[in-house]
Image (cartoon, rainbow, N blue to C red; front, side):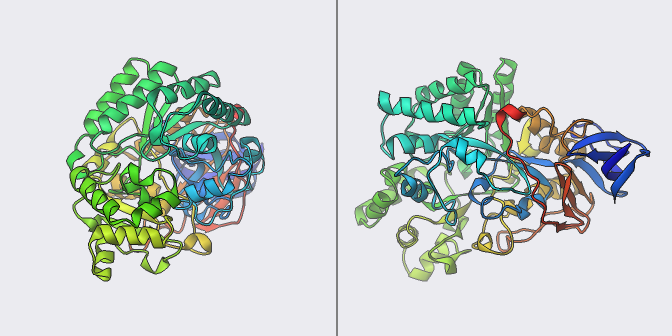
Length: 532
């Protein structure tokens, strides 16, 4: 047999959760053509994997790289940690559809998440068909918030019959184009204005197209269990697969609720509800700064919010609401040192500063400092919020059911995407699980952790020929040093690639990273739903 590439003598984990074996893997024309001991094949190239782990490429089920892939197609921060596929368009945010005359509306709305991305008019067909060549595969979701924004702007009400028909038409167009499903972001406007019945009606369209529902829960803090029950009920009533993304119990009053939530999902599965969740291995999350404010502050869009923030009365009300209820969707924090400026397009000199530090610098209180900063940064600020218990992180990683997703963008240590102080998960999610929680802390086994990142994730997504090392499957493969592979990215120094000099990553049979150096290859595919 002839093949393009032979991976020789590695410790092979096939992604199923099974124990490893020392095997060769032969690849030809994008796919795996043979796996076995001491394969007798003629290879154009051979990679020596002795002493290294060989496993399926990691599938990052929860990312926002739609905001960066078009301007960073090499996807360095992701592919260098072993990611070969990203699922994008989460939390209700998608860059399509973008209707005529509404480019600025969508750009302003997504500005804190995509400050450098150019927006243009396009439907979902055009979006998928014109997506640039990239180093990783990408599967796209259509965002419920974007659908609502296109149909009815930021109005805090139910859609009219005509507006709702428009939303359904846009959703159908996206699904027919190949979207994997619909995402929701019920924690922030305008998604937060949607009733459960609105979502159930849209989920019926997902059901008819055998597509999935991915949700950022309506509340991840004091109301997290009620919000999870809402997601379960959508899955029960529509019989769609539900993916609860970046699951967390945020805020010091909610630490320890993770076990109850996992029990709720296990019970739902036993009753026939198809539900999964994913999480990232960090105690801090990330969000636009405006989103931690009460929802009434955000009503009507960025311009209306900025005008409100100028009012002393508004600031007093914000202060009172936060003292009573904690941060919107994040709960109570220990202090304003827990909120750190991450990306700020107009005030980059303040990246890395906490709200407490800003208040000290400006000789004012944190609420005034926060509001002044949002006004000056035109609502575009993104922050890191430390609000999750380490014990809950450990419980999620140890769980059989919880998948791994970074909730991060693909960025790099150069160019426009190197600006600011992004969350270290952009660079470190997968090696952090493997290096810290598997190798150092023994929270779970290597076979189990790889399964959570590969085969289990592919099953949740409905992928038929990715996520496992099997003959006939696409050759998405990650190779790493098991004793060395570790995240180096920190909150203070986020733009750092993982440790190790022997990482290699193969996407659709092409070597994208060899010995921890990017080759420049762009073999990624857009994974449309009908191609699975």
